[in-house]
Length: 228
Image (cartoon, rainbow, N blue to C red; front, top):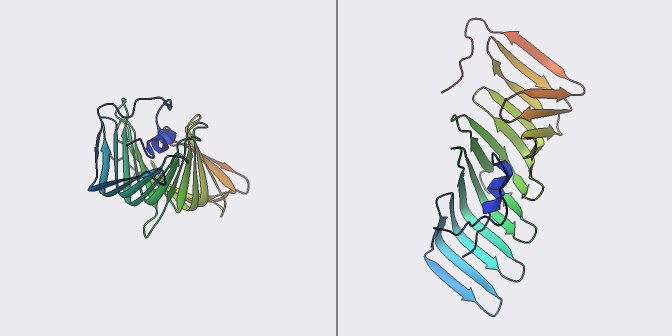
């Protein structure tokens, strides 16, 4: 079995990794049933599909690999975990996904629940993302979020229709449907709209662009204390 969707998580990694990284070293692959369809040149894995090695975990109900197209289709309770050497990690959950080996592009789609991603930095601080669908471009270091997009930290929530994460600058550009950022900083609360905004992954800073409106309110009674 090859490595479905593993490059998806490189788009949120702390540092880029090459496509030639040996994903299979030390891996364990399991499924209840495996079918080699030689007539159509494809492989089908069904029931409790899992792929594990020291850096990656993938789980799903079904996985189909088409050799000619070099494409993976993954369905049913898709879960991916990527651990990095700096102790950070990325988790992804979705209903179905497609990965194209040739272009190193991955697509994730919602079912009853949205596409959910979680980045945890080396200090243990979490960043949560949700959307109707997501597309990762590993070569460009980009991840696109489309439809009912939200981004949350321990003291901040951002809502819009679209988001674009750039691995090279480690920033989210958030656009459409008048993005809203609401949350707390030490000593004050705020809620601000603008035509677009940029969120910096590590510093948690925000920049607002064009037609900025909203409010900032002092909150001296309960100054914010960062969650540990």
